[in-house]
Image 1 (cartoon, rainbow, N blue to C red):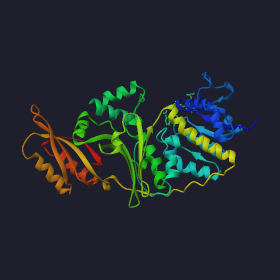
Image 2 (image 1 turned 90 degrees about the horizontal axis):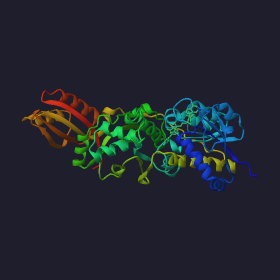
Image 3 (image 1 turned 135 degrees about the horizontal axis):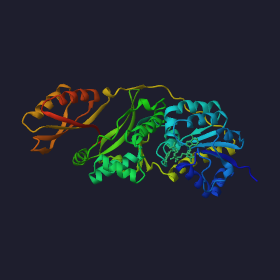
Image 4 (image 1 turned 120 degrees about the vertical axis):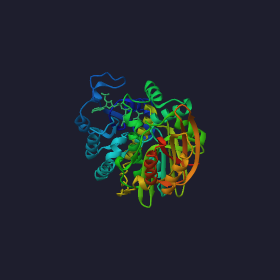
Length: 429
Ligand SMILES: NC(=O)c1ccc[n+]([C@@H]2O[C@H](COP(=O)([O-])OP(=O)(O)OC[C@H]3O[C@@H](n4cnc5c(N)ncnc54)[C@H](OP(=O)(O)O)[C@@H]3O)[C@@H](O)[C@H]2O)c1
């Protein structure tokens, strides 16, 4: 009988379970595509006493040594998550001459450069399609299909939890706390939602995308990050009236050789395709000098969509193994300077609650004018006669973030200003 290609899974949770199910269901198809059957030889878990349907007890272990001592294991699939021990496990698997497929954005964002160099040094492959955008093919297109392009920008919605919440806020007019509770009830948000709502998860994925798109070393600390916790139902109402959606946008660009990578809530013009990516869907828009704009959209999470991405990598490696093809060298990344937020130019939306009296707007306009900030529009949206206040929504023409920040500080200090609410960048339109 043909010798199978041995696989070990590190983790058998949501994604690992999906991978195991798909491997069972598609066994004949995969054997035909690879030229040999795939065999799950070991599955590493934390709790070996738990019964796991469809898994023979003899394959289950809690020891990486047991996995690596099995010479028939040629591909290690890391779907356990978290930084440690996943990072160490991946490194040891590569050093032992195993090809590795991972879905781990945190490890790839923080240690991807080192691990890719380790893979090259040991003549094995490290593939990570599932680490960004779940089932959406994006790592492979950036590494292969778009390689002839100078990528000028990557703009993405890459966190399903927050996109679900922002869509609900826009459609239901609900406040942040209510949609978070709903997302938690439906299982879209974790009991501790920090990594999603503060943009941490998205910053990991953006760091990976920027590395691939621009061939530069990017870590999550290079990404400027703001979360969605301060958004209010009023911001969504004003956005709609101005013709915008509010999205947690992950955006990467190289400007004059400096990296600008941001994850932040932004006004996105309704004419932009990304404005219409709703619910738990993810999308990544790539701009290249040859191809123009391309959009990849689809399910950003879930056991089976993620298994689709994990298994695509497994099949790719397995086909190379069977054909005896050596791995291609990884493209070397270079270090890059990060442009400070103060120098990044954008149009902005600003919500200001002021005393409802004559001359207030003139004072705000003077401050903006002194910073060379040109106003695009001012709308007085609401007044509260009891409090004697009015709400001004100001949009600006493109201006550096530093100038706007200085102006906001001065506006906030005006006695006629109660509060400067959210200040958000505007994209498109
Ligand atoms: N869920 C998604 O839709 C999705 C989408 C894209 C990417 N990802 C990524 O895929 C990875 C896995 O996510 P998941 O949702 O499948 O996680 P999960 O459901 O929590 O499963 C984690 C699995 O890893 C095992 N594990 C965790 N820590 C371990 C340790 N220290 N030693 C041994 N085994 C350990 C667990 O063992 P026990 O079973 O014994 O607890 C469990 O089987 C993460 O990197 C995640 O970011 C997930």
